[in-house]
Image 1 (tube, rainbow, N blue to C red):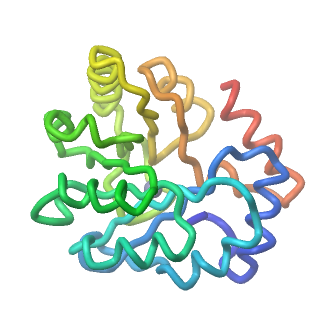
Image 2 (cartoon, helix red, strand yellow):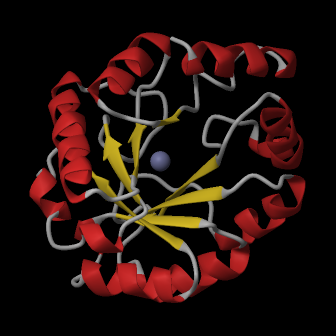
Length: 210
Ligand code: ZN
């Protein structure tokens, strides 16, 4: 939603829902863990009645633990955290699962895939960042394709049902490469919210079949 028109978020959510989106991805930034501010739980709560799609909440905030409850209450279905955003990521994931929500880990371009090794059994989602977090509209970092493949291998080897999502610089060309590397969920902002509302369905279709 970072690329949506913030002056009419409800309308934008209804438009992407009708356009065929599978999830609503919400980037929460605190101006501390990442160098930008976006929105918090109150805005997410206000968006919640406008769609039945799952809210995929990506927390780029640190410390993260004190706020998990607020995002659960706001209507998050999946909560994704960065391992660098708290001292005990295993405990953070337990806290999310205990609240009955799906848990995810986001790997920054500089974060090694080994960060997943001891928490894979607590995950519903791995989010590979193909830009440094903090801003929408950045260019895809090619070196992360190898991390997508390695993550896919680790998931398959353990026989786990974990979604592998890619976030940052996704447009039709990079969508194809991310899917080929093993991704099954694509996060896109700028590539979806381009043109008028009646373009969104076409924009999403292009990402689905790049
Ligand atoms: Zn995100």
